[in-house]
Figure 1 (cartoon, one colour):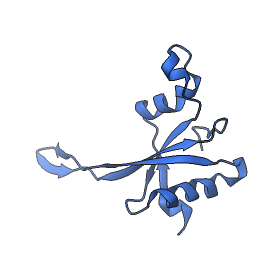
Figure 2 (cartoon, one colour; figure 1 turned 45 degrees about the vertical axis):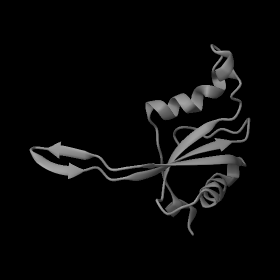
Figure 3 (cartoon, rainbow, N blue to C red; figure 1 turned 45 degrees about the horizontal axis):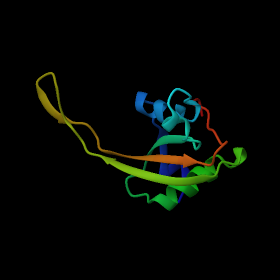
Figure 4 (tube, one colour; figure 1 turned 90 degrees about the vertical axis):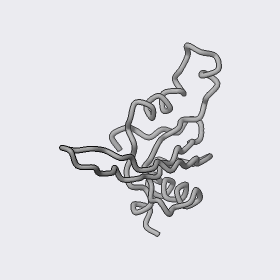
Length: 109
């Protein structure tokens, strides 16, 4: 399977930025123990954890990224109203990828 069809895009939200910056946290002792960076991606709904890990290592092979752990979350669709009409947001699958200590992926990539 094509790695770019498994990994759709990187999720850059406030919560995902907090997860990424836990490596640099010095204010709290429990937070400063987190030495492995975590990155959040939006992935294909049918992809499993090993496929996600292999796809990320393949996409970022020039940076020699190594995936330590992958956690996945299914986000269900939500009902929304737009101009009086009832609709739904699309459901997605997110993957929180833990990288090897010292590895990092820039936000622009």
